[in-house]
Amino acid sequence: MTLLLMAAGSGSRYGKLKQFDDLGPNGEFLMEFAIFDAIQNNFDQIVVITKKENVSFLEEHLSARLPKKIQLNVLAQELTDLPDGVTFTGERKKPWGTAHAVWTARNVINGPFVVINADDFYGQAAYRKAAEFMSSNTDAYALLGYTLKDTLSEHGSVSRGVCEVDGDNLKSVQERLKLVQKEDKVIDEDTQLEFTGDEQASMNFWVCRPSIFDKIESEFRLFLKDEDRIANSELYIPLMIQEMLQANEIEVKCIPSGGDWFGVTYASDKEKAMYSLKEKSDLGKYPAPIWN
Image 1 (tube, rainbow, N blue to C red):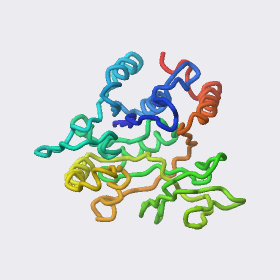
Image 2 (image 1 turned 90 degrees about the vertical axis):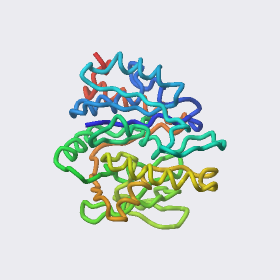
Image 3 (image 1 turned 60 degrees about the vertical axis):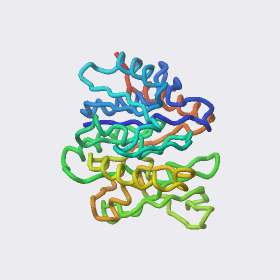
Image 4 (image 1 turned 180 degrees about the horizontal axis):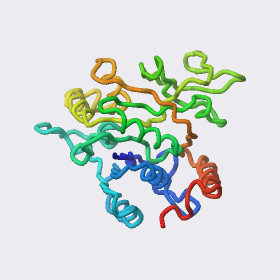
C-alpha cells in the first residue's frame, strides 16, 4: 500500500514553505506524522510530490529517518511533464494542479494508494480505515470524510467540499465557499444554504486506484488544447474522481474518518498545530522524537 503526499505548494498564504516547517515537538515536519501513521498501518511505499528544487533535500531528510524496509520516492512536479506526443511552448508559472501532481507518480505506483495534502493532519484512525478498505476492496475508490462542524474555523469562513452520500456511497462533493458556524447551524454565506454540521466534508484524503492515471492523462490532453484553461485553470484530483463517478466508471465509498483534522493554511495556524502535536506526543500517541 502506498501513501502519496502532495507537497509542491508555494505556501503563499503561510509566508514560507509550510511543508518543511518544524511543527513537531522535536522539529518534525507535519508530513512526518502522516508518514508515521501510514507505516504503523502497513503502508510500505511513501511517494512525495514536490518542487524540483526540493527533491534532493527532502529525499535526504526522509531517507535518513524512515525504516529501511520502506520504499521512498520523492518526485518533482514539473511543467515539462506532459503526455507522450504533446508539447507546450507557452508561459505558465503555477503547476498544472493536484491531478497532475498525482499523475507525476504514474511510473512508481502499481497498486492502491492514498492521496493526501502534506500540510494537513488527518488523525491516526483515517490511515487504519484506509488500510482496511484497501485490503478488503479490489476496485472501489474511497473518500475519508470529516464531520463538517469539526472542520470550521473560529477565525472566519472556510471553503469545504460537502459530501452528498447514499448510505456509504459517495454521490457528489459540492464545494461551498463561505461556511461559518451560526448557533446550531452551518451557513454558506455565499448561497445562504444551511447545513446541520453533521455532514461529511472532504479534506482531500482519497483512496485511489492506478486507473486514475489514465483518466488524468486523458483530461490533461484536452486541457492542453484549451488556451483559456491553460491560462486560468488547473486540473484537480477531486474533479477527476467525480467525473469518473458520474460516468459510472468507478464506485466511491464515503468512510467517516473518526479522527481529528487540522491544517496549516495561515501563519496563525502554526501555534495551534504545534500545541496539538505536542499534546499528542505527551499523551503517548507518538514517540518523541517520532523516529528512533
